[in-house]
Structures are given as C-alpha cells and as structure tokens.
Length: 355
Picture 1: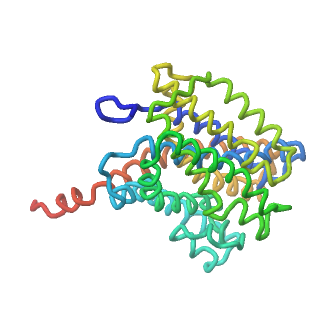
Picture 2 (picture 1 turned 90 degrees about the horizontal axis):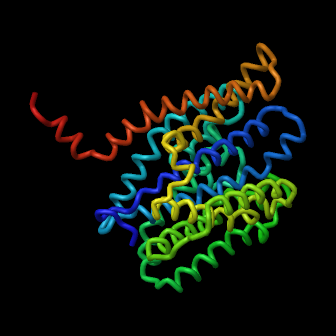
Picture 3 (picture 1 turned 180 degrees about the horizontal axis):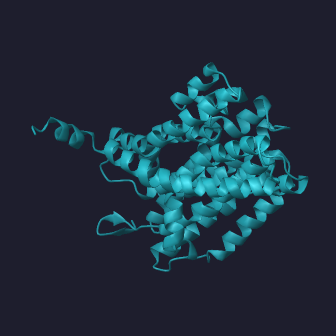
C-alpha cells in the first residue's frame, strides 16, 4: 500500500490532467452547438472519448483514496455532498433555459432531478436540461456500486486483478462494437454510449488500476509517452467509425496515462500537471463541466439576437464566461455546500446549541 502517515499519497497530477480533458469536452460542445466549419467538427468529434478518461479516473481516484473501515453509507453521503448541490443548481438553470427555449418539457426534465436520465433511451430525456448531466447519472451508478466492487476486488490477488483489468478494458472497447451504432442517436447509440451499465467496465478498470498500484505494481513508463500516444489516438479517432472512437481507440492509452501520472507523484517525481495552477484549475473542473454548456448555449442565443459574432468569437466569450463562472461556483457554492453536507451532525449540534 502506498501510504504516508497512514494516508494514501496525494496525486496532484491527476487533478492537473483534468484540465486538458475538460477543455477538449468544451471544444466538442462548442462545435456541436454553434454552427462552425466542417474541419472544426471533424477535429473535435473524438472529444467524446474524454468521458471515458473521466470514468476511468473516477474509479482510480475513489479506490486510491478509499478509507479503511469506511461504510457504504458514509461513502455515499460524501459523494452526495460532493456532487448534488452544484449539480442541482446547474440543473435548475439548464432546465429553465431549456423550457424557455422550448427544447424540453417538464416531464422530460423530471428524471434528471434524481440523476436517472441516463436510463432512458429517449434523447429528449437523457440530454434534457443541462445536457452534460447524463454523465453524472452514469457516475451515480458507479458510486452506488463502488463499495461492493471494492470489497470483491480486494479479495483478489495481483494475478486476479490483472485478469479483471484486461477483461474490463476489453469489454469497454468491445461493447460499442457489439451494439454497432451507425449515428449519434437511436437505441444502439444509447446502449453503446449513454446506458450506465455499458460504462461500468471503464470505472472498474480504474478501480483495479488503483489497487494494483497500491499493491506495489510500478508504472515506470515516462508520462510523456502515454500522453503523446493518447493525444495521437484521440486525433486519429476523428476518422474512425463511431463504434471505435467513443471508447475503443483510447481506453488503453488512458489507463496507462493515469498510471504513469500517479506513479510520478508517488515516486516523488511530480509531473508538469502537478503545477499548483493546473491543480487548482483541476479542482474547478467539476464546476467547469457543469457550467460550460450553459455558457455556450446562452452565448449563442444572445449572439443570434444581437451582434452576430463568428463561431470562434462565440467560443472565446463562452470560455471566458465558463472560467469565471466555474471559479465562482467552485469557490462560493461547491466547496461551502459540500462542507455543510459532509457534517450533518455538527450542523445539527450548532443549530441546537442555545444562544
């Protein structure tokens, strides 16, 4: 086990790695929601793979930081405190915008209240309101299953973990091929990309990877190698069939990239992604993710009715608004509300104390 003073070694590079992944998602949604040149659409199609990176990273981080003797209830309470307050605020804003613009109905928005939208094959439901919320619906399944997955995997030896890792990566790559979607909508696409159970292998791959590293496995490959390979695979994936470019083209490079970044921090050789500026930006990545599409939609709606900027100018405005909003949301909403939700007993005592 990699511990310092009984606690897992901090891995700041993993926070820093969230930054380029988040910007890639921003670029994809900018081109998807704002009329732009064909070349821009072509170069950002494979940004969909960034969700695969975040799903693997989610499993890794949760398993790496798992607390001995932790209960499922305590874990889920912490996850709820981390995710729900800001998610619900972004949902209300996104839902109101969708209703005003006539994009969704109230009925379509309802499943998003309880993070159930990804279970519905109708795009009008799983992309309702603040469309990016569907991935949090998937993450919710990960969180519910994590305590049980962790207990089962901890019973395996190192060989067993390697077997599970290979199987999980193989399934993650093979399932979209099995469902064989031919476009970015319809039932096959939902099964291949949105359906929560389909994305579980990516999460399990991250959990197993963390357990292997904590058991003493070393990832000695220099970070720049998987970084270049992952970026190259994402670029090439723009020209691959949808069955491959959503997960299969990048799942292995992403797994190796996360392992290499973690190894650098663990061995005392921090990477460029451990720079304090990138780490702080990475801490804001959840807020960035939740607000970026809202900023793009509002900027485009205002642009259509006023100045009529070029698509790239709308992107610059959207990015600036997103960065400022994400920092504000993280600093003044996400962190304070998470602290309050994490300590319900302390809050109750404070309210019950006589003045």
